[in-house]
View (cartoon, rainbow, N blue to C red):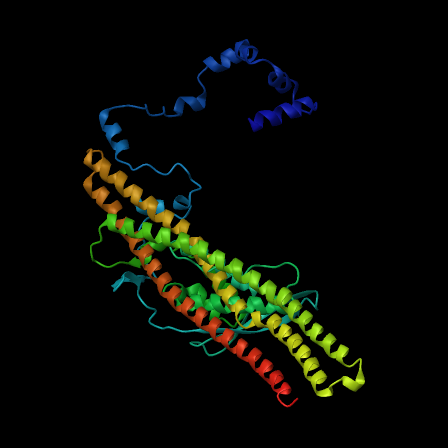
Length: 467
């Protein structure tokens, strides 16, 4: 249709098409098919047509029909994450096995079910010293971060665009793993102190999650990101990561799963439970983020303003008491004036306090909002795999598919199921640690804050003791 529109538009504009083409383009269909030349062209056997094989008949015989019926149908929605990720191709056995697989990731049975086998060489990595740097004689500016992994000898310096490159590699490769989101980009205000500090805090959390993940922490591209010091080697390592063949569907070939039997219905029930949990947690995290953000606004704005108004009112009382000198008490006036200044200072303390507690809470909640937003697509992969197993078993029961083919689909579905359960297990482990730390840190900072406020008030109170 688009081609027809384009051709008509050209004809209307009086283009340089030959007269024969212009007349045929504008002629009615009946005229075009009934001209002698057209009839002769249609009736004469084309040289190319003579050697073109005839398309197969839709129903040649019962054998061909049975053969077509033995193939599990592909998802018609080619934009579905189940298709785009390559998991459908893996489940259907359309991913060729490789002669040598350079990387393997093991899943083992733990007290709570399948879990990733721990990284045999655990490590941590600090993110510090964000520094503004320039290139091209000061034309371009950027912020670099000093990364110091515990298992490497020297620190490396990375820009945000390097983090972004790594993040895209992770998304491309690890189809069934919830990759933590990077802190958001920002076009303006990138060099403001508050933004730089906020991004550093969130990169620290991102890095902590990466290094603690048994699979992500072992990824060669991640290790290259943390350790490469030479520019030439950096570019070579980037190209190697970008040409990695063990991505998408092929990545699923790297899993070594336990031999224990798991009933697929039990696995599906477990996934459904986690799906409901993750949805509820996502809603709750969003609710807490909204409340905490509003509290930050009140600390910086409302609370600060109200305490300053209270302090100013006390100052006014003190000034009023000085208006009649014979009856004014210098000590009382001084104490009331000091009380006013104390409450103004308390207002400033409230304005500064979110940096000590609420900001850290919001950072953790932001990380988990990103992690939770990944799970609907990951769960959809498992749901698609379950559907293929049920379809293949039905076809096998009807005699339209060999049982060994159906068993192969079921076996590959087990791989995806074990991987998803291991990721769910890891998420819960990290959730328990992270939220315990978040709540402890928040409460400790709240206690310290109110102790400092109390100390200021007690000091002011003592000024009235000897009046």
